[in-house]
Amino acid sequence: MVWRSSPAATELEDVTTDWLRQLLGLPAGFEGVINDTASSSSLYALAAARDMAYPDAHRRGLFGLPAGRVYASDQTHSSIEKAVLPLGFGREGYRAIASDSDFRMKPDALRDAIEQDLAAGIRPVAVVATLGTTSSSSIDPVSEIAAVAREFELWLHVDAAYAGPAAIVPELRPLLAGWELADSIVVNPHKWLFTPVDCSVLYCRRSERLVRAFSIVPEYLTPPAGPADVEGRNLMDYGVSLGRRFRSLKLWFVLRAFGRQGIVERLRAHVAMATEFAAWVDAAPDWTRVAPTPLATVAFAFTPSGREGQQADATNLRIIERVNRSGEVFLTHTALAGRVVLRLSIGNLRTTPARVLRAWQLLQEAAAEEGGAASD
Ligand SMILES: Cc1ncc(COP(=O)(O)O)c(C=O)c1O
Image (cartoon, rainbow, N blue to C red; front, side, top):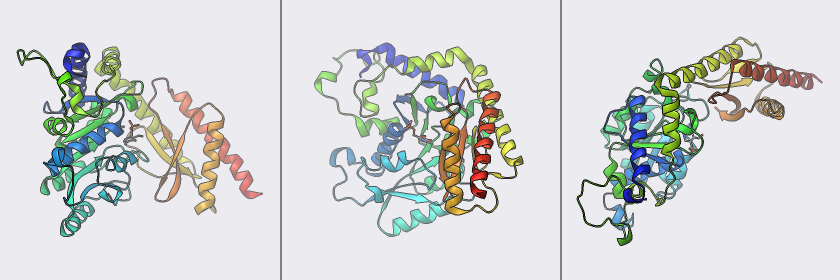
């Protein structure tokens, strides 16, 4: 809650989020706080953005003020669209920006949308760039998006919930270049950093906005007068929760147990397994990889000739159902460019190359059964 209710928990959150910041190569200006999920972290980041766009919102709310808008690509996770609802912007307060053929936000389309909205009397509030989208792990061009955000003085929030830990791996860090220009960044250790759910770190370089957005201090939470430098942060001021779990402890164990090199080796191994799987898909005549594979998530589909549209979608859904019913692996599906797509994502400490090969065998067996059904 407040520092004095558990100094150790508060201090360990300071320590672990700062260690992680250093591992990620982010500048010291980013202050970290641990939330349950990226959905909460992004909501809080956008609350801070709202405070910047509507400086009197903490007192007056948005009564009588111009409608606000948050921009994100059409590949953005639904948590961003959801976050604008409790902030009072409504669904119309969210504007999806077109992405290119590699599922990356188009910065020109972003600029056009902002200019249109300004001309219509709408107040632009924030831009969200995603590094590692949910469906294909595409990486938005964050430096170009940051330039647009700066031009229009908008808050830039980066959703790196999935891909953030890639920055710990030297050869992968360039993929995230430009994210240090953000006002806030979310990274989920519970996605690709071996930490059990729930553990989401929100980094903010303007924490005073976050605190302004959320701070309400009744008498019973006010520290008695004393030397001001004795107490640390009151984490209740960084979001909606008062009481909070000791999430930093499990992150501390992960960072201490594996260390930088241990983390690098494991993430590298995941990317290598995904890259190998992607090569099998590329080499198989009836299969197509439908997006680049920069990290450890492969988006692909069974695409035999003569099977198009809804028929192809239904086939892929049956394949994934069959594969998952085996109980040996668990894959998920999504939609990309309007088509059903399968995804294989490697992020678990116990996943081995043999298991990934087994997933490929199961997929091919399921596809062979589908092939038979189609020619009947
Ligand atoms: C890119 C991205 N952002 C945010 C989320 C939401 O994460 P959480 O479950 O921590 O709210 C997801 C979940 O899959 C995601 O892929």
